Length: 199
Image (cartoon, rainbow, N blue to C red; front, side, top):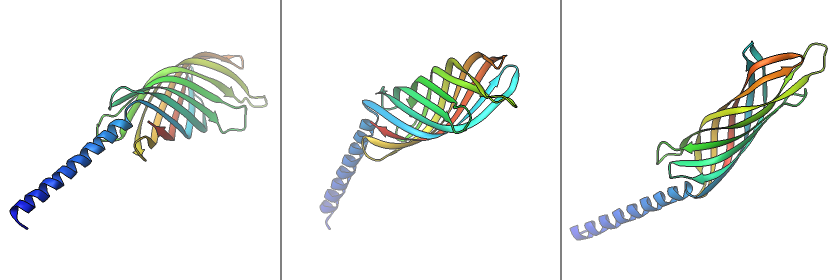
C-alpha cells in the first residue's frame, strides 16, 4: 500500500473513531438530560434510639422507593423521593414513610457512580412488646436526612439498572409509649436496593 493510501486509511479510521466518540458523548448526555424516574425495591433495617435509652429496638424489612425529577446538568439531577419501609415481623405492623427532596450527583462525568442526598418529612410508628401484654404502638413525625451512593448500569440510552445503598436518619421527637415518654427518638433506616431507571 502506498503512503497516500495509508494516510487515507488512517484519516478514515480517525474520522470513524471521532464519530463513535461523538455518538457516545451524545448518548451519555441524553441519559442525564430531561425528566427521570426510578423505582426500586430492596432490604432495609430499622433501628430506634432515644436520649434516655441506648437501643429501643432493631427490625428488618423491605423497602420500596419511587423517585422522579429533572436533570439540572450532565452531573446532577434533582428529584422527589418517596420511600416506604415495612417490617417483616408478625407483630403489629411497623412502617416508616418518608418524602424527601434529593439531589443525585455524578462526580465523574464519564462514569455512572453517583452520590444522592436530601431532606424531607418522615413518619413512622414505634412498636414495643412488653412481657405478658399486647404490643403497643405510637406514630411519630419529624424531619429526616438521607445520604447514599450507587451505580448505574445503562441498558440503552434511556433505561438503566441502578444499585444503591442509603442511610436515612429521622428525628421523631418525644413519643409517649406505654405510659413512658421516649425523649428525642431517632429512627435509622439502612437500605440496600435495586432500581429500574428511566430517563
